[in-house]
Amino acid sequence: MMQRINRTIFNPYLLTIAILVVAPLLFSTYIQTVITRFLIFGLFALGYNLAFGYTGLLSLGHAAFFGAGGYTVAVLKLRYSSDLFWIGAPLGIVVATLIALVFGFVALRVSGVYFLLVTFALGQLLFSVAWNVKWLNSPGMQGISGLSLPSLGFGFNLGTTSFYYLVLLIFVICFFVLYHVVHSPFGRALAGIREGETRMQSLGYNTWLYKYLAFVISGIFAGVAGVLFGYYNYLISPTHLGVGTSFLPMVMTIIGGIGTLSGPVIGAALLIFVEHFASILTPDRWPLILGGMFVLAIMFTREGIGVYLWKLWNRVSNRYGSAHR
Amino acid sequence: MGLQTRTSLRRQEKASIWKGYLRMEQLVINLLNGISYGMVLFLIASGMSVVMGAMNITNLAHGVLYMIGGYVGWTVAVKFGASFWIGALAGGLAAGLVGMGIERGFLRFLYKQGNEQVLLTFGFVYILTNLSLWIWGGWPRMPFTAEFLSGSFGIMGRVYPKARMANIVIGSFMAVLLWWLQDRTRVGAMVRAGMDNKEMAMGLGINLERVFALVFFFASFIAGVAGVLGAQLMGVYNALGLDVLLLALIVIIVGGVGSVQGALLGGLLIGVIDAFGRALFPKFAMFTMYFTMIVILLVRPSGLLGRRV
Image 1 (cartoon, each protein chain N blue to C red):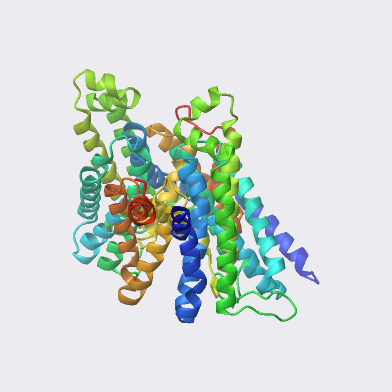
Image 2: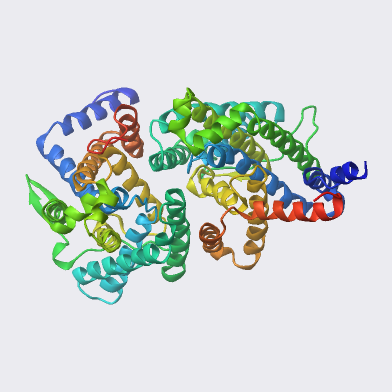
């Protein structure tokens, strides 16, 4: 009985959620925005990992879906003067999904490194579109400015803290959904494809379809993150559709650990944390630091920091949580 | 002229533009523009393509090597006043050395981990781009060219820049040189053998590791020289790393991986399509390239002259 209670209290997921829930009571609104940013990008990386870590699809163009979600919200504000969450969010997700459906189809004509190149090119294509099409830009600049936190209708505008809770709620829901996707037969098939596609084919799986679905689903999550980003950031620009933004979930995933669900989230936390300090101390050298972290992570960490943290956690909870080894 | 509405005036303008392009000189000018640009694309893409085919390394930092070549070439040729060709050589050497550093210092240890290698090169894009920003600053360098290459000469009653013509000449020369290296020398044969079957080639006593290191250096060198040559058309600026990478990728996707011929065909095709696209649909200039890439992907994913994907 004692063992079971201790195990539940020590459950890392619940602990983290508990910490995040009480955080606004302890920290200033500024810190809350930093944590919100972490949650948004954590969600982006989480979805990305479904394609990258679980299916082995290396994509350098995921910002296309992220930015699509954000741009939908932004265009809604710019051209239709609406920041209603109940319109922006579903619409943004639909747009991101459509783009993922099309891009996935074109990109999955090839595999391996070619796939990476094609996703990169398609992401840049969307960047070009956002740069050139006037309708997608605020007058006199690149991108759309003047974005704001969403309203829930009837004049109920969200503030920093209430938006924080909204993002946290969406993040938890998505994590929950993704957890079940990964532990379902579908998820296991994806892992099988990553380990050996021909083997899966010989077992009768339509691997193309599984890869396509995994890609589209990861694009949908990226779109959700993008929608939230569109509300969070006061401006959205073509860079949010380009490779600079596509690179971020990849770094987060590699640093945090490819094979686990929480790895990308841990990587996201680390990255946002370091970025925050870099923006204060050496804003010009942030890309250098980012690249350096990335190169070090690839050269020296075998499984990512996330896995080390999990192992540490297991050792600690075994010591204090229960009697059996 | 009488009363004419705006739309009918615009229609007349458009009609005369199209009629203009049916005239021989305009066609030839555009064709030459396309070919000169295509030659630069070929030089950029050929190094990357051969490394991809031979060593299975997708060097995403190839564009940055091009940029470093351009920056170093600018420093030597413009800032220090040396001759343009010394600048090109210096640019090539700088790029070659940086490339070799990446390969010997990092990529070598990730042998057999294809994904990690690619990602590593992308990390270097960030590092090298930011370092270049630190060293040379963010201002773009204006197109610079050799003394005897500046100015233009007449062709079919119009003037045409000598620099562009030089690109075509140099590019063709390089194409022949690279083709000769690939198909007619022992080294080339060793590289091709390594591409087809690594174990067999090594079993025949070929020191593939040294051959590949040489190939990587040479590919980076060409990228650097291309950076100086291309600087005549595009100048040098900090975002070149990714811009050029994108161009190289499109050329490789269209032309196919692993061969000089593929890079040449892809480069010329994209260059010409881009030139005519700019002339005929100026608003959609960028998209002609993407369009071509998507068509090739849907119809022949392995590229026009590539091995089967």
